[in-house]
Image (cartoon, rainbow, N blue to C red; front, side, top):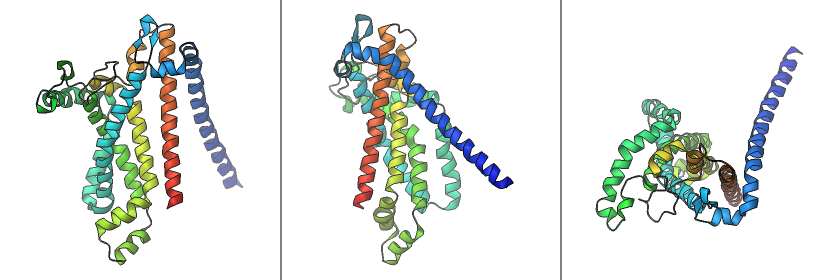
Length: 297
């Protein structure tokens, strides 16, 4: 009886914790929508997300440039970070000897605990000067001198790629290790090489977990603020080059919230609504693609 009592207590406690998490999300969403919807109703949704003119003091609220900037740095981070994280996960799960795993895994996971401002300082002192040098060389031939500062999409993408690496690597490695051993043994027994087994058997079997890792990495990249502010250049204009400075949605909120007032403040909350909606749409799209792939398999 005593064991059943504590089991029920633990069950109710876990249910209460889950309920608190849902309530917290609901309260945050309610507050953001309450503050931002009046501005969207005043300006119009399509004008707000489709206009390139961001001049709050003159009453112009258009975040198209920030939407493009957020997608640009996030896509760049995924292009650079996902292949590296997945390759590291494959190495750790299938090829690395145990002593190497004991050293490399904590080192990579340690990246997740480094404050974002440290990544920003790293980007400012090492990555931005390298990008500036590249922009001043043959790769930057024909660029406007204002695009040769080094604060750019490519610099922000590199920093974000490093930041999402532990997330993609850890979840992908766990997914690969969770594949039943029979899959691997059956493939090898049929004459496939170890590499063929990884590519044609293990990766497809672990696809859902790998996609989950990519989604979490994407969420961190699109929601990152401090590191991006320090290396992206923060120019509210639509970029036309990888070397162009850019401002993201999160960066726009963080930079201007301290001195915003009135409709300006409401516009920043409306920016949060758009960011919230974008993340929800991306997550639902990935879930749909994943489930469709599972059904086809």
